[in-house]
Image (tube, rainbow, N blue to C red; front, side):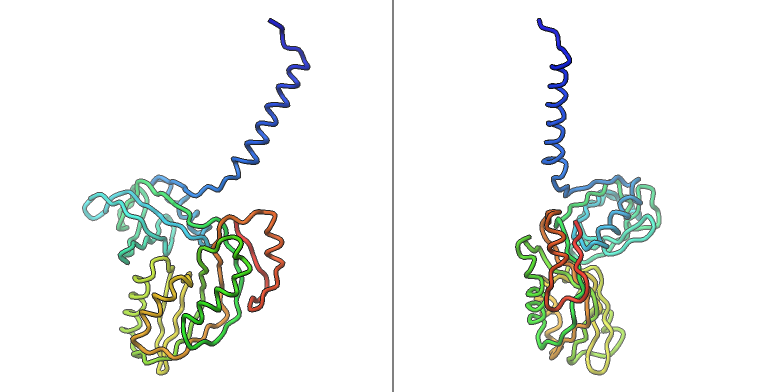
Length: 269
């Protein structure tokens, strides 16, 4: 059997280096869309939620654990609508909001044993959109969606906005109504991060965080009994949720000039 010489070793090193380069290029950069944490890693999970929320990403969280009140099993999926040190608020599909802590929690509703995060979009594009008047909430949906059409090539999952919406209509003017309407909107719109209602003699001001234009029809259904006649959107923050945007396209997107957008456009991947 022929022994390996220096030339053979050099060939082997080159082949191995090529394989490593190939795997790095084609496999390490595949999108990771699921993350797992144990209940003991609750602080890491909360940091991940804060980072993802800051970039406008949408994700689902599955918590396996137990109710602290009676230690019965808990296994539900929902969306995170708030965080604090070592805990988070989980909104379930039935509208309930529960506090979730780590494995040894005793003050929250749920002690988590395992936390699974499923990402629902690969990239986001963030910008401020100029405010406008419309007579119908679905007209507002079309206006917002039309502004984001420069991103159609990346498969838009949804477009979320955060800001104040002043709505004229025959709304009751009292604190009880404000709470009831806020709760109803939060329950009906699953992915909505937060909503606050402030009533006045002429209508209401709706302060929303992370409402998607895909859910504007639901919002229309909730508000329609009060006969809304006009909507004023003040300048608002927008996140366009898309599939993965290639690095090579980021500068092209960020230098786009689009009517209705104020200031810079930012891509988050």
